[in-house]
Image 1: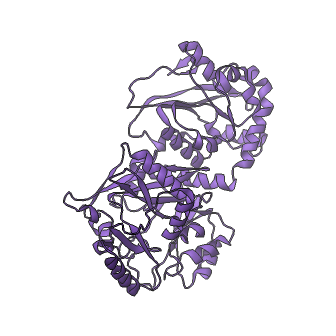
Image 2: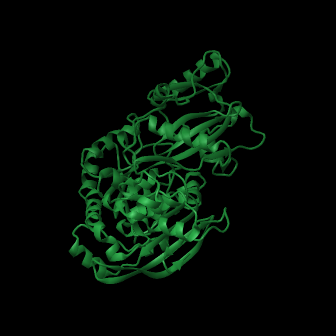
Image 3: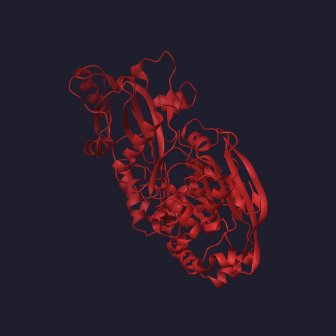
Amino acid sequence: MKICLINSSYEGVDSPFEKYDEFPDPSRYIPKSRHEFTTRWVTKANAKEEIDAICKEDFDMFMNYMWGIETDDVAGVEATRYLETKGVPILTNPSSFLSMTKLDLGKTAGETGLRFPKNTPGRYPKIVKYSNGYGSLNLDCRSICHSDNEVQERIYIMEKGSDVFGILVQDYIIGKECSVIVLEMGFEVVALTPLQYIFPEDTPAEKEFLTWENKFEAVDKGIIKYAFVENEHTAALQQCAVDAFKAIGVTGSGSWARVDLRLEEATGHVYAIEVNCIPVVFYTHGNTLGDDLVISEKFPGAQPACFDMMLATKQMQLGWHNARVLVVAKVYNDFALTYDAHLGRSLWHGGFGRLLFEKTGCNPDVSGIDVSEAMLEQPDIQAFYKKPLRVGMMQELIMSAGNFDHIVVFGAMHFLDTAEFNAVLARMFMLARKSVTFEIDDLDSKYLETLEVKFSGLLNMNNVQAVRDFGVLKGWALVLDKKMFLYSSPSVCGDVYGYGMSFQSTRYGHYTVIVLSDDQTL
């Protein structure tokens, strides 16, 4: 896919951020054979003309990295609003998100119960900051105030320094500085592993926050470090981040965010501080800004799969896949009555649950997703699967499926395009506790061409290379990778071969046998 990265230009602008901004570029992590990225620059002065020219180019998707608020000298909110009138597909960062300030977050917090630091009379210390600033602009140790006189003096200094930013006074939360990246995944919002900033041991509690210098200098030099939060506070941090993202009302736009949080030392309460519309991801390899580390270490498939998740999510939200999924559903609805006659009692559509029962003697809790309602009437599904079964698009429903010990997919992955495949695979690894098992149809060009002629609009993909590129994740072992006969196709009148693949979490050791077919096991 050809993707245009639209970025704010610093041309003719004296911005304090230019020195530190290396600019995001997914092509640092994603080969051109997968997606082709091109950066285009937009100035605030000539935004309409430049956007008009960009939209005339041959791009499949436009990823918006413009960031300036209305009072900035760089392109941002107004340019994005104009871009949104062009009728092109836009990934991330809608104008409604760009125009949000900390005051908006505070207002929604009051309406939703989200914890957001208040300005409690008589409670000190306070922190004084710009309400619509970013990047910890003008935040330093003098931002912490211990009396009303100090607060008023700080407000005076900040107002004198800028006539375009509002002022926000809040209770300073003594505790840990944390951040969480959240992404829309289909129609869900999912939080990744939180980061906590680790300050030098002799740092006073009132100085353990990210000032301008801390964020851009001390972190870069390794003076302030960060670590993943994987303890009793993880779930609370993640939930607060998701709640903050939902509270500001930007879901449904293919967005992501980095939510800055404070974990209060005395109570364990989590406070939302800010929702940043552009996480610092796809920057240079080895950068010390933290967000890329979260993606590379904690997102299954790292930056390439993360981008495909965002892309697949936008496609779902736009409904690009609806027509072809209806074709799949119709084919299998028509096929349901004669399915066993063609393929026998296979693993597909219920056979997996039956074989688990026959081979192990136990009655495991097996639930399922299928796009075809008629297929769910198969006897094995009715006998061995937990109700209710979910009917719909796998690439959507997996996003909200919840956690399982084992996730198994048969006869479905070839209906996903490559971005959807990577998104589904990444989500499977997020949700599976012990194993992920699937088969990949190794479909040749003749087979694909024949199906296209016979079933117009029926997408079939050979995703063998995609799963190879995805690789084996840290903490997982590839315990089966075997080419095997899968089925005789009644549509093409030929045998279909593919790969049986199973990945096992190394946290749990060896697990039970899963049957892949009547004469082959894993």
